Image 1: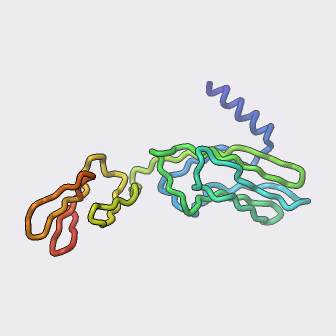
Image 2 (image 1 turned 90 degrees about the horizontal axis):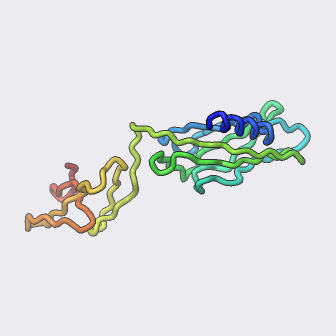
Image 3 (image 1 turned 120 degrees about the vertical axis):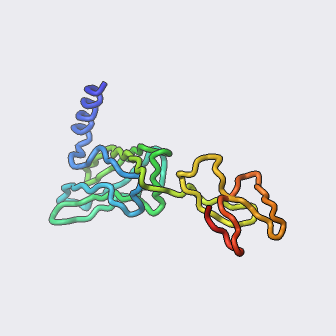
Length: 180
């Protein structure tokens, strides 16, 4: 099976003619917007070339359209993460990008595989949670399902009320919330 995959990859290299395009990129999920994923060069002396991102599988807006600049007679393309990029290897750990380079009548297409690697030291917030009272708290992705989020104390009554959606892991002290 590995031999077959290698042969298919070599055939794709010959057929597509994208010699300078890296086929596989490993990126840490801690990489944020603006990160340069890969740079690659192209020759195109008689025309003004274009470099396009045709599609991404699974669909996402995490990747900017590639840039293409001329430097010392060659064109350098760059793939970067967009401002919406929030990589999470537990959600999606592989993206397949289809790129097209055009120089006059010469068109080259090829896939670029992006593997997202888990970064155990990187903590991401899973999104905002609004309590029934309207406060908004950030919940890190490391919080396990069913964990206590907050406890609501009613002033003067000393009674604790736990909303049906979850409980806050803080307590009221002098009119402000403190962490447990």
